[in-house]
Amino acid sequence: MGVSTALDEFQASMDELLGDLPYVRVYLDDILVISETFEEHMEHLRVVFTRLSDAGLTLHPKKSKICADSVDYLGYRLSEGGIEPIPSKMTAITAIAPPRHRRDLRRFVGIGRWLV
Image (cartoon, rainbow, N blue to C red; front, top):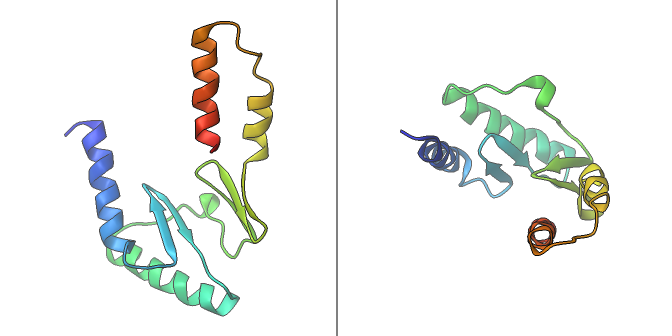
């Protein structure tokens, strides 16, 4: 099994495990649980943790944020205020020199597409 296939298989497994939960978004090993209230969030987490445990999967505590007002997810900062690119990523993008060649322009446009 190649790396590409392994990632596809893992994503399919995670989708099967958590995909029916409307308050969960999963991209590979990045799991986002969205809730309106603290009590609701505790219940959502209980369901997610139980499913992960039953599947033999564990979480890395230092990589986890629980009950956060904002979270960085897949290159974006999500909060009650909305969705925005992570500031450190924007700093890196604004530091890019203006394109001088067609190749540079294509690279810059590719980065811009990621933001949209």
